[in-house]
Image (cartoon, rainbow over all chains, first blue to last red; front, side, top):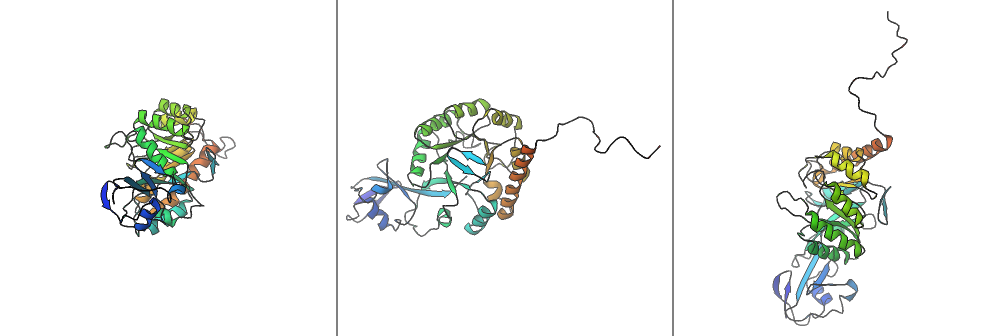
Length: 67
Length: 255
């Protein structure tokens, strides 16, 4: 399926159907990340049960250095 | 003790985490600064670089309170969104409201800052707005429930020090919440002056990260902030136009 991740169209295997699976696909599941799906924040405890569908807009953000 | 909302800190130095030459220097600078509050920004991740190191991962998070900022926001709505993203990490509930209104001066947009601060207080955040040194705006921010007020000394990263000590003093005098001088500090003496004016803390980043030796500067800032605070608590002498002798004027053995 095709998702829009951080503003870019990205094709991922169709079986990566949850947010957790998506994070695992990019090897980000151990990282401190925050995910927004179609403009709604996905709470940490719901990452593994939140399903993705074709065309979904996903934002994956994290903490970076700043003042 | 510096009390912000439900938090208590022994250090009055809040340190930014941007623009250090490398993580090793940064880690040492953070350690010698003895800060307990570190600021961060929230940004999109490069999902194709999972192995890229991140400073947050190098920290013992039990030792530090995270103060994410809303930098990048130009409106209250954007600031609230960034704050919510930060809180969703489960790592923090403090937020530095930063709504920039002008890219050249990086001065905050007062109206959007106030709106964002009010909304975030309602949403249960511990709210620390970065603001200009406008005295009335500082009062309004306090009235909407901000937990600290963070007026800038001079433009972000400019290193110009305290341009309007009178306004800062007015803000400090009227405030019932901590006042943290944020932005524009260049030297340890700038930080000491902020503390001597009665500020409850100083937030700085570039002054340390951009110094030739960030680790040494971190130490200098820590000491300056402590010295300035002690000086404030001790109470300075009155200024006089003419000299007042320190030695007794009586009992001299001449004439």
